[in-house]
Image 1 (cartoon, helix red, strand yellow):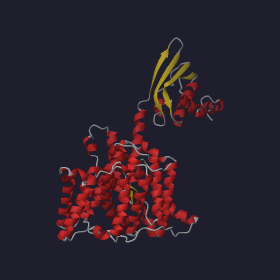
Image 2 (cartoon, helix red, strand yellow):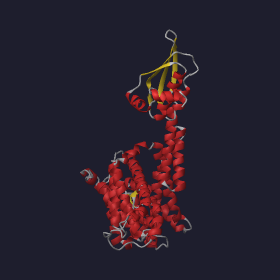
Image 3 (spheres, one colour):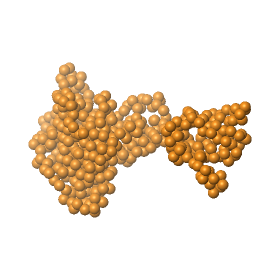
Image 4 (cartoon, one colour):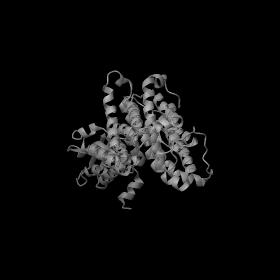
Length: 497
């Protein structure tokens, strides 16, 4: 099932993919080093992971043009494991993370993305934009004026270069920004922070490395509490990023295939001495904004990353962090959904609340999974409350037959069950009751229990009750869980037992 994509994914945009992949590779280097430091491991662990994950997902991932590598969200989950047990257990946890993600793909958990509302996605995007910007602040704090000047110049290159006739459309402006500012920094010999100051770059290619941990139940119990959240956060961030890239490029992607691709990539990373990773929204947007669309851009990013840090390390070390800060500020500006602010007055209050809460939780906790979970929970509650208000019951009395007909409209489920019961008049003295359910649907056992309560209450008052118009789905759940036609159950209720 995990086959290579069509020729178009590889050769349909060669120039754009190669240039975009180069830009992404340059921007990946300091981030991979920074995430390694967060996790408490050597910088090469993050760099090897970024190469391996980008390379493998380019081949078998479900979203062409999306960049996957070592990420901060994943690194934060590894800190305690590395501190308490060391790198071998991190590599073992990375392998198990990959296995869990592959299983998720075969269970088609990627399809669960359809349950995440647009408001949650928008909140997720805005929160990430804020986090990306906040991550650049340490590079702009307690520094000389040269850093601010270089950053401003970098933003000038990024936003003005595309207006230059012909060449501005051919070359991605972030790449020009990085090359130009590196040249200026080297020529003027500016004493500003560079990539080389982030940590030592590896000087060898990665090698196969089986984790040196005992294959015992004890080892599994140590790594499982870390692998499960790593798998969940990795898939969540990857699938959310895939959805965003889908929107940016007006194309679709295979979310379940992406789950499997991410899993295989993490297994590969673990076997080559790398940490677990996932899709990166910032780098993916850099790729798209720089003209990357196909799988080639992701592969170029991974391969160029490895080539540059191993063979061109003396040049890479010279890149000023101010240039990469300018690129990431561009990413945060481009990532933020400014329309969501403009449309606050037009959108429903519930949608605005969901978006705002998602943003606050993600930014406050730096936990993407928690923010999305809270957003989805809120969206579900708002939806359930809204749907419940569309349920109503009308009634009419047929004097000739002394029959009261109740006509139920809408969805009956846990949130509308009590309102359903309250719509009936049990004190009315009437011999015959007809409950017309033609325009109603019963969804769960709460709804069935409410119907039982209504029927049994009427029968307790001496009325004869008939149900008509049940659709097949409602009839199935009522026949299975309902008790109003079960003599033994009715006897218990009517007898007061």
